[in-house]
Length: 616
Image (cartoon, rainbow, N blue to C red; front, side, top):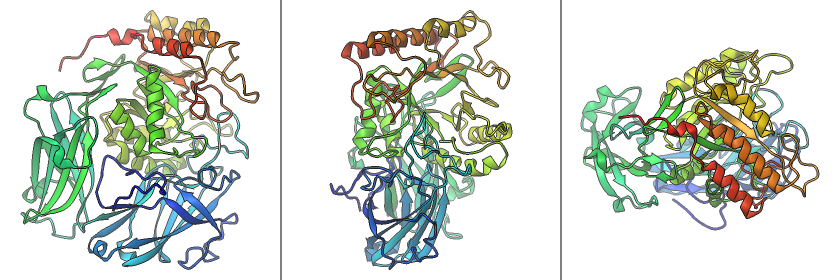
């Protein structure tokens, strides 16, 4: 059952692309304990009657001020506990316990009985706890173990030193996204792969039904129905108000054609001309209502979702969206918040970061060294904001093939959760894979992750490792923090004239004719009031000098017909890194005329965009 009580932090539904009415938010006050010796299991912490000595405010990590603790030292093991009530009617179906994210290894107990475990600090996961709960009050216990210095887990920009330094910041341990219960029938709609093709004017769905026993899917016993609806700007809670424009049924007689447990539907609205595409800044979304019914027509399960009609094509010079070249005017977004660290204080904070970026003329972002929560991607879909999905690979050693074991399972969970978002235009599993203690990266780790990503999602381009050292990539990108616009222009002059592209680390990587983008540049330090901050290169002496540098660097990239996008570092300051366009607490850093100059150059037509449109 949904709740929006003001006392519950982050009360909104955490998974907008797969919504049900029957759910219960478990955020709020939990009992809590630090376990510095990682001995809690031996001391009986998992028992339902164990009493913890502290409290924490979930979903905020113990390092954050919003958690009520603000403990920023290394913490390998933590424990959580809270009661929750289950009505007898819920026991007629299944009860799913969901976690948005827990860093890193997680184990749970229900009423003292083990309920499952999960590895991965950034992917969402769930447990079926039906057999462990009872009507009335139940006790949930959660254990999290986090060893970001061990080399066996992705940790992103979390600092491996006691203090934050350079481009590493305050750590996150344990629960850092919403925890919730979901009440579903015995057989229920588990997931769907949704693809809306603008050129074909149709939506394809591959729907997974979970909880079916042996022989249960017999002819006429169950049916699957999907409706496509024309929506206003909002996504209303009451689907009966939507205007249906297409529908399709999957009958149980078609079960023999189901592939790998997925049951396929196609929705084709009458008249392709009526379909409006999803584009940056003009994001038309369409609602989906998916229902599972029994032989009598009774609805067993109902899920609300949405999609956007759009096609991606990667041509030799760059990315085409719905048949037109789109220059990627991206900004680096690291998703850190002063009060919540990894966790935005509110849903509005997620939306506002996108709006701040778009106000400066950016049409998207690299979601950098972090898997962002589903609510951020929802707002990107709603606002028409292009994003690259990226894993927080820093901290994971990939100098041997063992790195694949610690990376790929979680990355597959990320792809599965986020693949339906129209805002995502590409995947970047790794960023700057530097050598480790003098040992080179294992190229096969990057190659195999690239290949698996393409198999799971062939519709989007994949950058194997942003910046360096490329092994197999659809787009060749470089990071270039040269601060002098004239020197910067010299890097790309030969390419502009049809010659060889600028390649960093030429002894380790080489361009093979892929589309080319500069996926990190700028990073100009500016904060006259911060004495201990840093940024790239020499800091400008005035706001005017900063604006001129921004314009000069950016025009180099916009004016080159062989460059298909840029990503400026970065949207906001993060702790000691003072090279954002806004402060860490999202305040203005410059005078209005400086922001106007930044927005004006960002909105300048790019040479790449003058290319021909595709005829489809």
